[in-house]
Amino acid sequence: MELYETLVRLVREVEEDMKKAVGGNKAAGTRVRKSMQDIKDCAQQIRAKVLDMRDSEGGAA
Image (tube, rainbow, N blue to C red; front, side):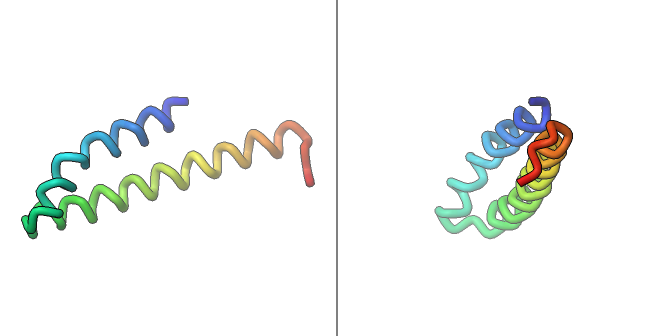
């Protein structure tokens, strides 16, 4: 659950820069791209954790 909370926090933190980037602020666009990479990495960690939980339950498909 901690990773999910981190993901939610990362998404919330990028909101203001996203608005600025849409408005044409190039520096904010760079920060958004960096934040999106962090979000992607966190989401991948969550995905791996969920697969581990599934596999540890013996629910092999």
